[in-house]
Structures are given as C-alpha cells and as structure tokens.
Length: 524
Image (cartoon, rainbow, N blue to C red; front, side, top):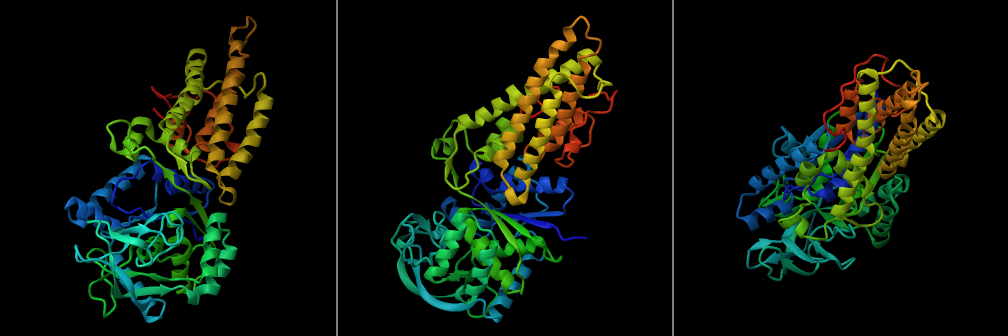
C-alpha cells in the first residue's frame, strides 16, 4: 500500500477558544483538501495536535489564578469540539498530556538531538522580572520586534514570523506585572541553524514556498541563520531530559514542530507532505520541522499553504454582548455549511483581511436564496408531478445541452481548484455558486413545460436533468460543505461523497423515492 499524503495544520495553543479567524486560517482549508483527496481514492493522513505546553497557557493561568493544566484541558476540549462541529475531521489530534508515550517520545527525541550536537548549550542575556522573580520567555514577555518593530512576544514575532531570543526584544516588559525586564545571563539549550544552512537552502529552493515565506527564508540565510532557543527556565511544560538543566522546560515552538512527527506515527514517511499554517507560525513548519527531519536523515518533499491573519478588529464582536466571533457561537447561529463557505471566501491569502458579520450573513443569504430555494422547488416539483419518485426520463429540456457542457467544463475547473498543485478553495466556492445559479435558471425556464396543453411528459427530462445536477453537487460540494452535501445525498438516496468527476452527473434511478429534508439542505 502506498504511503498517504500527509496533511498537517498548526497545533493551536490551548489558552483560549477558537474564533472565526482560526477557522479561516489553516483548519477548514486543510479539511477541504483532505476530503477531496479521499474522495479521489488517495490515502490521506490528516493530523494536528494541541499546544498544551505553550507559554501562553501558563500566562493565561497566572492571570486567571488557575492551574495551567486546568486551562489547557478546558480549552483543548472546547477546540476539539469546535473542529468537530465545523466539520473538520482529523485522523489524529495529538494530545500532549493524554496520548500514551508522547512525553517519553519527545524526551527521547530531545535527548538524541542533544547527543548528536543538533541541540547545544549557549549562555545569552535573557529577560528577567525582578518583581515576579521569573525568567521571561514566550508569552511572559512583551516588547517590540527588533526586525519589524511590531508589538511582539518573546521567541517569535507573529507579524514578520522572524524569531527573537527574548533578550533581542526592544523595551521588553513582564506580561504579568508590566515591569521592565532586566537582562540577565542565562545558560539555555539551542538549535544552531547555521550548520544546516546548505540543507535548508536546498530544501527551500525546491519546496515551492509562497512568495512571502520564500522572502523570509532567504532573509534568514542572508542575515545569518540564528540559534533558536528550544528550552527555558520555566514552571510549565515538559522537563528538559538533559543533565545540567533541572528547572528548564522544552520550548513550545520546538514541541509543536516535533508534535507533527509524533502525529504521523511509526509508518514509513510519505512521498509528500502539505502543511497548512498561518504566516506567523510558518517558522515552526518551514525551519524547525525540516531540521528535525534532516537530523534523522530524511529529506521530505513538502508543500506549504500559508494564510495571513483574518482579524477581528472590533473587539465588541468577541467580548461584547452582541454578535460574537467565537467559532462556537457562529456555528450555533449559522451552521457549519454557512461558516465553512464564508471562511473559504474570506480566506486571507497574501494579505490580512478583516471579519465582517455582514459578509457572513451574505453567505447565508446565498445558500437560502440560491441553493436551498432551487432544491426546494425541485423537490416540490418531483413530489407534485411524479408522486415523489425520480422520473423515468433521460436528462433533457430546453438548454440542457448547453448547461451540461458548462457543468462538465466547470467540474474540470473545480478539480483544479481542489487539487494540491493549484489549491484555491475560494475559486471552488465561486464555481459551485455558478453551477447552482445556472441549474436554477434552467429549472425556471423549463418549469413552464408542465403547463403546455400538449405537455405529454415533456417536463420530465428537465426534472431528471436537475436531479442529475443535484446528485453531482452532493459529491462536488462535499469538500466545502459536507453537512449539507450529505443531507442532499440522503434526500436523493445516493451514497454520500464520491469523486469530483463528470461521472457524478447522473440522476437517481427511475422510480427512486426521494426523501427531501423538512428544512434547508445547506445551512440552517
């Protein structure tokens, strides 16, 4: 059996719930690709995890006066529930605090890398809070990025995605008490990237990086590859399994990169991997993960689908008493179909975009006024004119040949939009909408056939044609809107899913008793 296509998505830190920006980033898009490839018969392994040991979890716990394990577990449960309700189906979600053998596996990897010299000790100036008596790293320290001057935490700037060593931050302050950080010498463990310069440069040159990520990687090479801290003196996280660092914990970014390897398991590595991540998290995927693979003698062909930030500028949408931007609230109000198609349409590629509630409402109107309206008319016509049975007629009607050719061209464009090489889920949504509108127009034009005095069943081929389109959409739209697509397949008494191909453009067998839903097919 061939190895699967390995699809990964960034492990989210469990310091808060998912909001609409997270879904618009890596998760729904990665699920679309996973569903498409599975329908094509390709083996797929779709993995992620939860970054329970991220410093942001500890920072959130300190602010709330709670234990970090309580914060991590509570939000991990909420995040995985949101994925499930939004139709994002992973094969494996690594749970660092629950998965058997994970802690031992990570400790063994860390220890081996240290023994091989991939991880080495360095003494550097590190921020320290004298008021809190705490070394500051990650979310515990805030300041200004020395590379782009944007506000940044320690370790990684989520604006320019370049690493910092905490002590590099301009005007660093303690995130808990706001006191100015004091630089102190601290001996920590690092991954020096410079020894991997040639391997990384070769890897980046062949990986087909998106332009902004390619610019980041080339800048890192030009400026001199940095040493990346992979452990810190801290109270939260997995302990460093190396002598001489008794109160140090493994860094969250290192763990997030390594977590992907644990999620893949012990099977032979795949022929290719496709990583979905936000640009602010791209360093872990494009730099640390390849280095971990190099250390094991593996050069894995990989592809990156990188999104920019989808931001909620109006804080009232998150914190206020009005409409919320949390994933749970939006799924509850709009349903997974509406939310998925919206975040795919609004997916921030190449530039930052902003969440606007009216655009989400417009996505629901499109489903109601176009998709559901057409399907309701179609099922009503079959009920009234054929007693609820699929007609014994071949697809036809005025304009059918033109519509059929248009649909067959459209499904080829749709396959291109779904495929890994030219993945464009926004284009997929636009193509599906165009198909539905064309089918609805066709239905309106041919509805008059039933009222001709000489009709003599001349209206039935047009019903069969529309049922063929509906049956095709149950397969073609499933990567984008699986919940509605499966409801449509059940209404047509056809198996759910199936390849996105011209072969799906067939009506149900004559005499099949249809079982339309009592409410909307897509969304609610």
